[in-house]
Image (cartoon, rainbow, N blue to C red; front, top):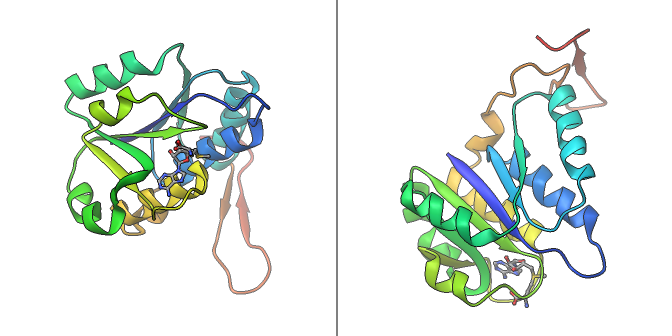
Amino acid sequence: MIEVVRIGQRLVRDDRVTTHVALVSRAFGAEKIYMTEVNPEIKDTLQKINKTWGGEFDVEFIEKWKPIVKKKKEENFKIVHLTMYGESINDVQQKLGKEENILVVVGAEKVPREIYGLADYNVGVGSQPHSEISALAILLDRIQNGKQFEKSFPGAIRKIIPTKNGKNVEVKETRD
Ligand SMILES: C[S@@+](CC[C@H](N)C(=O)[O-])C[C@H]1O[C@@H](n2cnc3c(N)ncnc32)[C@H](O)[C@@H]1O
């Protein structure tokens, strides 16, 4: 099982980035995201996406990031903190791919120093600053080798049939 926790939100509200972190988590095979300091509308947005496109991806708002990280450690999840200062993803992706349960931690701006020590892996997707959205997508793809795109999203009202030209969408009247 893969879950994600996002720590913080920039002072200038970055709701769109936060929503995209949740959307990437869902579309790339994670089952749940925990979020701090977030616009409550994000939960509704993801519920609507589940209703239309299937699955039970869960969003939980949390007050503090540390209790969830500690709880997941006790449940034998490996804590994978994405940071440009970490070990290269090229060196750890194989090992990470063998882990059964993972909690991925992404930041918004500067993250508390403590997370580096609590993490089982501090992982850099390159050693240049970029974005939590891209870092998360690349990590999830590397550790699942593209298999995340074969995952089914039960109960979808709309299902895309991949096609060479145009759009082919299967539409059901209601969710099963
Ligand atoms: C806008 S960045 C913040 C960068 C900031 N300078 C810092 O102290 O980490 C927000 C988040 O994106 C992720 N991130 C950005 N670049 C990354 C990279 N090269 N590798 C892994 N994660 C990265 C990290 O999770 C980071 O907390």
